[in-house]
Amino acid sequence: MTPPDTLIDDLSAPHPRAVNGAAWEFVSDRVMGGISRGAMTREIVRDRPALRMRGQVSLENNGGFVQIALDLDPRGGTIDARTWAGIEMDITGNDKDYNLHLRTRDVTRPWQSYRASFRPVPEWQTIQLPFADFTAHRIDAALDLSQLRRIGIVAIGRAFDADIAIAGIRFFR
Image (cartoon, rainbow, N blue to C red; front, top):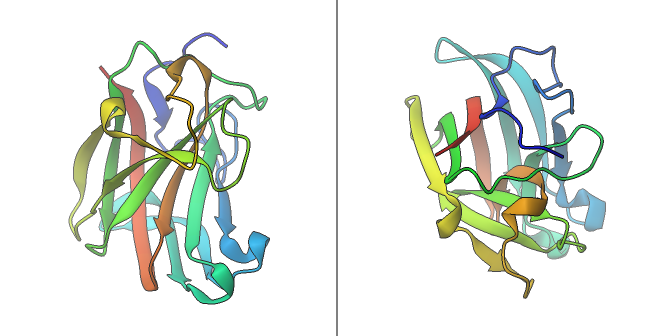
């Protein structure tokens, strides 16, 4: 697919749709037998419309994550993101560590991804995550930005209460 506009989502489409027509999805480790739980809502957070993920991450039963994820092509294909330097988000949260996960055509297993960590504070902030800062997780292939398929905002790897809100997400140059 040709590169999209810089915008990934500004929350102007009806929930759970993003501006590209794809739907945001909530996923937890329950798909693999874990017991983490949570939910995704659209609500006003600190005076801004936001997509919010709350949950309890549990390491029991080999679990350990909750996430909200979005396909970048509403038809399930890929986009070419090579013209951008990374992803920028307007976020707020509970001052805990989270990850942004990228999936490409090379990512074929649920545990594989390219990851960058960030820490949203209790005030709205804009953060930038350069593609150069993403590391491969359980995959040997290099990050191929010409085949970017999906993004996920993930609470993972330790037991904690997750609470994060996103008011906008876009590519940056």
